[in-house]
Length: 95
Image: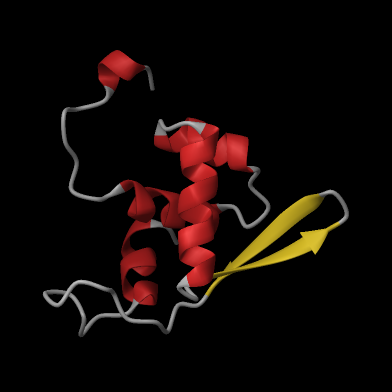
């Protein structure tokens, strides 16, 4: 997808997009995540760090690479969706 193909707005935030990428490929490199989402590497790294700090993602070092796992039992953060869990979102969009 090129920059001209990206719509002016989407239904998910970049955090949601990164989470979907990690769920789809637990061995994804930050640069691959950034490319898929359409953001810079530093932005992707910051979002992954946010998700790790909030407990949604765990990061484990495997040699020179990271492997990610998602805590699918945590609830979505916004009050409108707080009754739903991350696993429900990912079952629809990533699995």
